[in-house]
Image (cartoon, rainbow, N blue to C red; front, side, top):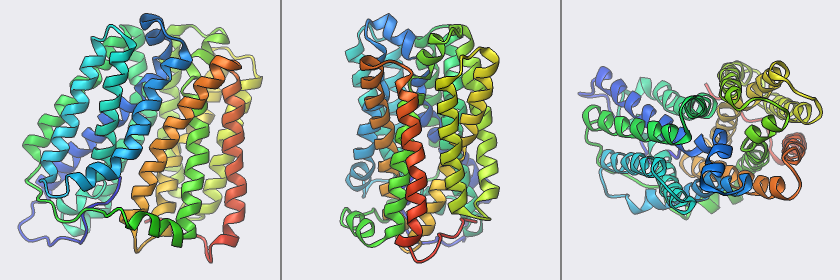
Length: 403
């Protein structure tokens, strides 16, 4: 999501229709990438069973790309600073598609992890460049809206792509789900080749800007801390929601439908948060913390059936669906003069938190039990309340809500 291209381009000669088609192609690429990164969440049990690894070890399929994406976001941006941005995006999305197809035919868990490593490179590099690409595609008056559409690909993948992938896996096999995402990546590649214009490189974010904005901007530091607590807590528990539900007696064939319910609730949470942050960004963050904590705690203490599990996942989905738009607004508004560096830190923190959540969740599942991740995740989400509560003393004013 790092806005690596700077400056508002002139509108001369730019076709709004062609620009929007290019925006949609990039959005499809972001959607397929983020779905690919998070797809194993719903398929841990069948993948682990097929490749003879524990569910905790299978969680490395989420940890590895998250860690790699956190590092590759700035590295790929700097390394490809002189290359046409369309070429970079096409290569990265093609790498993701090939890696998923390799996973679909893998006969060992080692091959899957190598493929997940490559996916991490794709996610970090693509995400870091695509966030600012709207500036180069549409007239200036449409940039804000086009950027929101591109970010919508991240949101939709988080709350809808994973459940759909799980549903495909349940109806056929986990290999079919990985293959489907791989084919989706290749479709995205074709769309970008035919719909995107040449986009010569202009300016890349420098490494020196990252520590500077973190050191001097308290609002950015608070936003990164909130991201770490909430995203780590969420994925520490959500990565293992399938084995948790199955321990409660939910049939494997119903998991996909339940995660789809989670996804629909998440989309609703996104729109609700969009309205709430215009009134109070700080209170919206606090509400997210409370809702996520409640969802995880209730799932831990209640004996679930298909109905109660659905209700709890709706609550949880509402909370998580509100996270990306709310936290992105916090970061952007905390550093209006350094959005490139601030959002680069945010995307690294987001992906690192996904990886750490899945990693430590795997340790907890293997060492303590599946339900333990719900309590740990809830504790981290609840801790965000104290960060928000203390943020008034660290900043002179509450960040204004994004338009």
